[in-house]
Length: 113
Length: 110
Image 1 (cartoon, chains in turn blue, purple):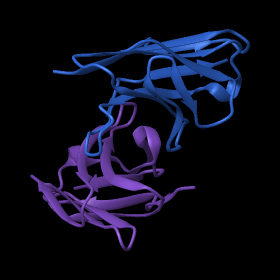
Image 2: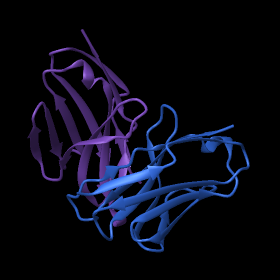
Image 3: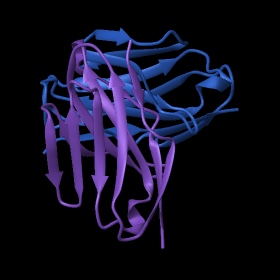
Image 4: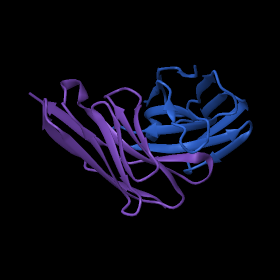
């Protein structure tokens, strides 16, 4: 069966520090991958999605970036964090066909101080 | 662009039935999803509709009308553990992107 993992689960980072969140999917190949952010009391906002290795689409302008170095690996990064980057970050995957459910990882809580 | 609307919060009684509505405006529609999210946790999949009509899964049912841009999630025999946020999400466009509403916070009371 397919599983998705992301880490770290929680982190507290100072303003201006770098960020790296990692997500991996197991038990499938060539998935569509997504990064979402949920600010406190807000809805889920799509940040990036990828349909294949090295293919990244950005949904909103921001100081974050994403990379997909391997088929089942998706990384969210920042060179310098802002206070507004605090939130709950969720990696998700689907096989990309209509009807295929999007499943979420456990999420990563980021607090920028 | 896309626009998804759902009520911010609802309150219902244990054992009762509650209906959570969702309206949407989008282009390239190819499915509507409902997720449940408990505080501090990731969303979990509840249901999927792509054709008009009702999909039933145990205590949960979901309805879709594509012509009206409307869906609802029906929860029967409410339990205290059903207290959570319920997210309506629409899939459309390339990359099968999923756009979420802001969620409906359901509180189940005794």
